[in-house]
Amino acid sequence: MAGQDTAADPAKALECKEKGNKCFQAGDYHGAEELYSKAISYDPTNPLLYTNRTLALLKLHRFPLAITLSQQCISLSPPPSISLKAHFQLAQAQIALHHPSEALESAKIAHSLCVEEVIVGGKGANNIGPITELVLRCKKELWELREEERLRSRPSLLNELVAGLERDREAYISVLRAEGKGKDVEIESVKERYKGKIGELRRTFELAGVNGEEGKRRKVPDWCLDDITFSVMLDPVVTKTGQSYDRSSIMEHLKRSPTDPLTREPLRVEDLRPNLALKAACEEFLEENGWAVDW
Amino acid sequence: MAANFASKRLSKELNKINGQLPPGISLVKAEDFQEWLLDIKVLDSNPIYLNQTYRLKFKFSPSYPIEPPEVTFLLCPDRPIPMHPHIYSNGIICLDLLGQQGWSPVQNVESICMSLQSMLTGNTKNERPEGDQQFVANNRRRPRDIDFYYHDNTV
Image 1 (cartoon, chains in turn brown, yellow):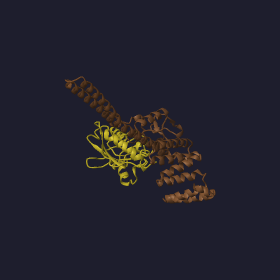
Image 2: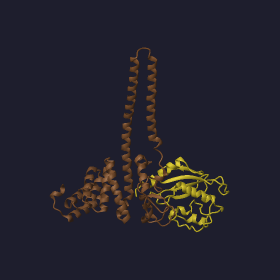
Image 3: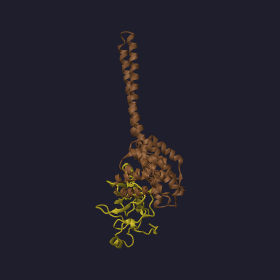
Image 4: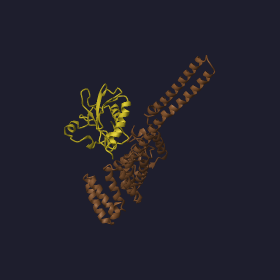
C-alpha cells in the first residue's frame, strides 16, 4: 500500500483532501482521486478520506478499486454516517459490476443505517430516496438473474421429459415387434399415442411459459404500491389513518408539509411506525416479481 | 431527490390513464412529463355546462407529486373556459386542492379532473369571480404564486 513508505501526517492529509475537494467540485475527478489517495497515505486511519476517494473512483467508473476502498473504509469501523456512505458506495460499485446479491447486502445495510439517521435526524437521512431506489434495483437484477436461470434450465427439463417418452415408445414398439408379424396397426397406434403425449407436454410447457411471462407479469397489486410514487414499497411505514407509505416518499412529503397526506392533520417523522407485515409481504412479492420494480 | 422522481410517477399514471379513465375525462396529449392536456365534460344536466367540453392544461415540476401541478383551463376552438365563480376568464382556477396548502401527494391527474368535474357539477351561478376583468388584465403571476382566498364555501 502507498501508505507504508509515508510518515503519518494528518495535517498534510487534510491539506490534500481540501485540494482534492476543489478538484472534485471543478469536475476534475482524476486530480481529485490522486489527491485523496495521497491524503490516505498521510493518514490511513481517517475513514472520511476513503469515502471521498471512493466517490471520485465511482465517477471515474473504476469500480473494482472503489469496492476495495469502501471495504477498507468499513473495516476501520467508522461512525454510522460514514459507514452508511461507505456501504452505499460499495453497493453502487457492486451493482455496476453486476453483482446484485452482494450489492443487495451492502445496500440493505446502508438502508438500515439510513433509517437510524432518519430517526435521530442525522444528515445521512437525505440519502433515503436514492438508497431505496438502489435496493429495489438490486432486487430487480437478482430476480432477472434467477429468471434467466429458470428459462435456461426449462428447455433442458423439457428435452429430458421428451426423451423419456420417446424411450418408452421405443420399448413398447420393440416388444410388439418381438411378438411377430401383423402388429403394424398396433405399432402405428402406439406411435400416434406418443406423438399426442409429446405434443401435449410441449404445449403445457409453452403455456406455463406464457403465463409466467405475460399473464402473471403485468399486474401489480395495489396493496404493495406506495400512493406517492406509485412504486412497490421497500420499507412501508404506517400513519394513524392506517395508510402505509414508503419511508423514502413520506419523508420527502414531510419535508415540504408536516401533514398527513390523507387528512392534512399534523404528522411528524416520529409519528411513523414501520409496517412489518406489509414489508414482508412486499418483499415476498418482489422476490417472485422482480419486474415490478419498473412496471 | 432524483430528477426522474416526477417522470417515474407520471409514466405510471399514464399507464393507468391509457388503460381506462372515468366517464367524461379523456386524454388529449401527453408527449412528455412536463405538460399534459386533458378534456373534461360535466355529466349531469347542469344547464351552465350542457353539451360542452373543456380543455385542461397540466404543468408538472420535477418534484411532482410532492409539489402540486399547475392546472388551468385552456381556451381553444370548441373549448371555452367554463363559467364559475372560482374560474377566471383566462383559465386560472381557484381551488384549494391545487394550492400549496391544500395539495397532497396522494392526489393525481385523474383525481384532479374528477374534483374539477364535481366543482362544475355542483355550481349554480353562471358568473365569473369578483374582479375578473381587473385580475385578467393585471395578473402576471403564475397560478401557484397567487394566494387565493378559500373563504367562500357556498360554491
